[in-house]
Image (cartoon, rainbow, N blue to C red; front, side):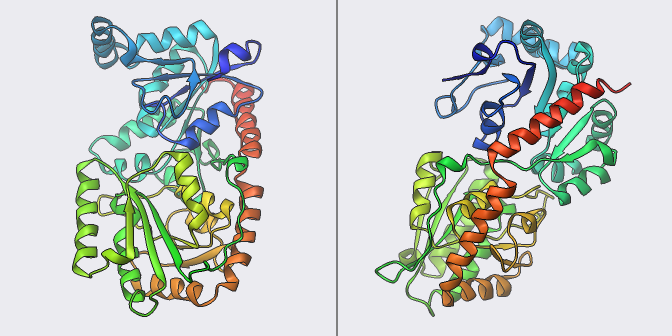
Length: 393
């Protein structure tokens, strides 16, 4: 188990607040990759703790039921934070607080002020794009911006959105989510011996992922190219995810595509990476959803695919054009443009010589801009800036 606090007692302590622990590999890498800071984690509950081993994690749900009830009442009506989280920060001498996702930041800024330590919040997508439509949200955001030292975002589109919502331009810094490239070997993409071409779509069954548009493009190409196979790694248990999945399954049935499409639910990270070995093209047709939800940002799957050498077809959505360089690491179409997606997929199907060129350029792009080793250096520089500047008055 990764034990940051125990192995680095003399380094400045940064408390990461994220709920649940742990939501994704890209949060885990930020925390476990630190070299010059010691990390602790505070959370409401734990999920996938075995998949993302780390200590210490102070989870409110781990407390005895009477204490949990007290903490819930305190957080809601008295202090806006969980007392056990404050005790953890004080016990470890935390020098700054890093909140992941906007709602967590909105809850935590008062705790940071009470402890007189700087506060940074990282935004990831729905927490900014969809949530801003909720009643009273913008007022809460402006309050967060007034009492926070720094916001981190994945790219320029998200930076513009955060500034539009009320943050000061010098408050918003770009921070690329890094990958552990030792776990993602580069593999040149070539047609399979049996002639099959495997296209992959992956992610949760959310409207913003645009999977239905990918299916429509595949349906147009399937009769023309019998060697095409679409593999889907798509899951999700929310009502919205079930609705999207039901729509997609209905489309597959109505267009008689079941024999050309495989569908897996969400996989453990290591198994997901193994599936990349058989992938020739990745398809990411993201859109702004009807409720305003968006990628942010961009899906980390895009940089994972480029790291593995997989050419990409995606949409001009949020910061995707920063992750996928058009006609260099992949091809882009407009949102909801099934004709465009079809044409870009067909270009790659008919030009397998592009796979290796795009794959090599993609790996180089990730190594230069999304390598976790370099990105941890960037993150720690941000932390040093915060500690040097101190708390905003």
